[in-house]
Image (cartoon, rainbow, N blue to C red; front, side, top):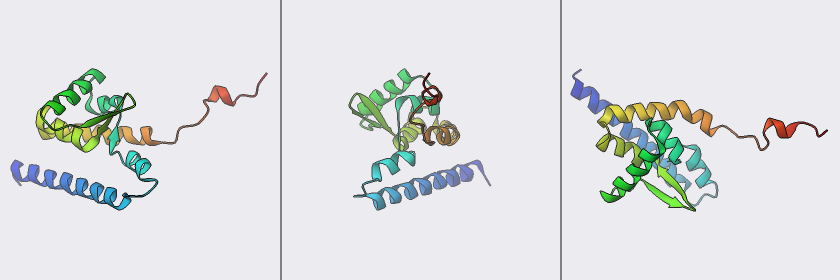
Length: 134
């Protein structure tokens, strides 16, 4: 198998994964739990998460958000002073403007590595709050 064939197969794998995630989003339309499901399914990232996935600084992500908007390919939306980044658009931006398919694959691999830690249930009270008073 040639390198071009391998690259094409990898791209088809990525596209089929994107299509599966999109189909799930369409199924959830109108569902009360849709937003939370979208967060759990890695459809959106914070700036700090995106920076970790891309192995860059938060400032680099802010710069990328601005550049993507300038080239009419926005990847994020600001809500209540918080940037919400669309994961698929961030990955597409990386592939087109920040190192090609190898850089995108690296970012996807880091996302798979970090996501279980990020998406796990957070305790309402830290350990020090659980101690009995006195």
